[in-house]
Length: 274
Length: 137
Ligand SMILES: C[S@@+](CC[C@H](N)C(=O)[O-])C[C@H]1O[C@@H](n2cnc3c(N)ncnc32)[C@H](O)[C@@H]1O
Image (cartoon, rainbow over all chains, first blue to last red; front, side, top):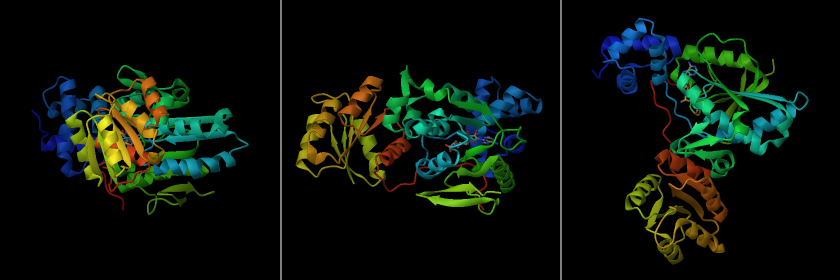
């Protein structure tokens, strides 16, 4: 059976909201079907109703598979270009100057999907900020989805993924081909770390960051969750640190303590000194 | 803006033509390098040339080399669009003067992003994420 019943849909809405804070609006029934049918097949069950039953029984494997399937993992290299120009032209130069005695820099890609965002930052640092070679630079990527975190760790991408916004000069400089895959250089991969992390649940104790990229994930949350996540993100940013959001996202009207700074075609949000 | 698509596959030429037309770019086509040179010489000179690698008569690498031998065409952006993705060959194409590299198969989004890397901005809004999240207040 290929359709989700009204009860299945309602149950999945609640389940997803609870597990990921992702809001599934009423018109998204088709999305549940297209995303979950492959899961139905992979788990050798008959229907979406069977998946719901398995979740109700507490089957963790099915829970994870369903959450993974319902996340939208669309991403690309140097996505939207402008935020990376802002890093290059304003954010990183400022931080290199202000952190020169600490010689430390920490950057967090807080909904990293398959890793393109964090690897883009790593390549930018390596190719254009050679001063940082002797610093301690922490590059962390986290995501809710087990599948994407595992993929990010491999640093291995298909041609379709490689084509999405990666400049050819960086492709030949940092990737080698292995069969049909393009694998990022160990010199880059060894500098990044990827972990599972749910933005919508209580956060474990963690370090402070100079830059947090929280891009194209708030769009899936309701206003309360957006506010709560932004407040916690502010708490993890060093005073004077920078928050980079997706094109459709802002702190305005949601959370205080950020100063919007227009840079080129984008706006970055700087945590005010407290 | 004008683009020239050079590929021996008619299907590939028409796919690229469709994508470029949607971006408001005029498109001319050639099935191999020699014919492409003739078109460029006859003018008008395109701002962008998309070049397949493996073609009869004159292949893509020769075409890029030939185009770059003409100083008066130096502002032309050249992008390889090919299944050829051996590391060493990609480097050869870039050294010969190609500015970007797109590996087949590709999506329309990838073409838009490559054009923006080439500094060619066109009339488009790339598809964002669409999903049930609440919109910004
Ligand atoms: C559209 S991708 C954005 C990837 C990247 N930041 C970018 O802008 O290209 C959204 C990501 O957010 C993740 N996500 C959704 N809900 C999440 C949550 N509650 N906690 C952490 N990550 C979440 C999804 O798994 C997905 O990989």
